[in-house]
Image 1 (cartoon, rainbow, N blue to C red):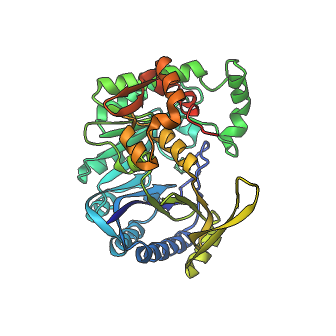
Image 2: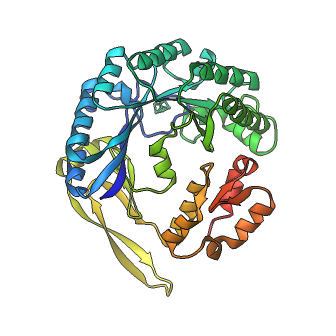
Image 3: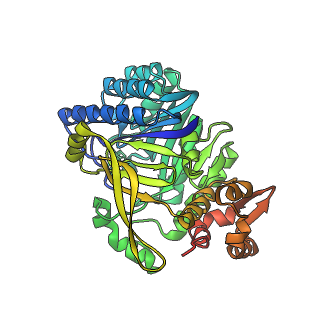
Length: 411
Ligand code: SF4
């Protein structure tokens, strides 16, 4: 049986964080209920369409899925169990934010088959949390974490961010130490990105310009300080027994996130919900991004064809038809070159890198036939290593991963 991963998007939050550009908004209960109904229709539809595939991982992300009533999560997962063939040891994750959970919610999550909890903490410093516009304090996070443990969850991720406005290296160290003391099975640690269209962009864009011009920013940590924070993450987590299995992800042995690994390995995944994207047999789909249009369109969801214009080498324009669904906003076949690029970019994010055999099996030629020159150059620069049939970035390579990945662009 063919396999795929399943991602379910819940686009609601209690309040919008000041740095967030994810597809999420604050909506009343009536809208949330309409959305859940739409989601159920979409899941049921795909259950019929993908009868020949088994689901290997389920990830309920957002937004803040834990902000929904527990009964909504129960309906969604019941529909997933009913519609799809789910493998017995499937990893089922839900993203949660402190301040949106009770012990009862966790007990319901466990009963319906959720076996992994991902908690957005970001910082253990209440002033930093306030500046980020988070809805919770560190004490509330601790309560949430304790409730998850009390309800038997033995696979918990904590999300952290570094490079926050006003954050010093020792502030960040204190956050890391507090989190390590809790012994979660998994830690994701990203650096803050200032994204256009967010309140943070308005507040800090001059700082970003200063940073880019090599000047010391006023509020944000300097590039050098952010680099030190990243290094500190790797050092402290390694000393505490966490393996770095991806540039920003660390886990105790046996607890790497299977869903995310599938994504970095370019496995097929189906995304359901507002704006969710899917990768099925090298076609990338994106769902509608307007909440009310999505809710309306799922009432009449049906399979159809998506037409794209394609320019041939001789300049002639051809119409290419792709299988699609009426709630898609786009569908695009990923060409062979782009597949190779993704294979490299995503695979090299992982500490154990990529397999030469897998490359050859996927593309019908040895990796050197395509990437001889960048492989040699990066190896010479000490950024990449070839060992036992695998190719991976060195520690230094991971530190300058943007530069290293750019070497694998084909066009
Ligand atoms: S909780 Fe997450 S998704 Fe929601 S606004 Fe904050 S960062 Fe964005």
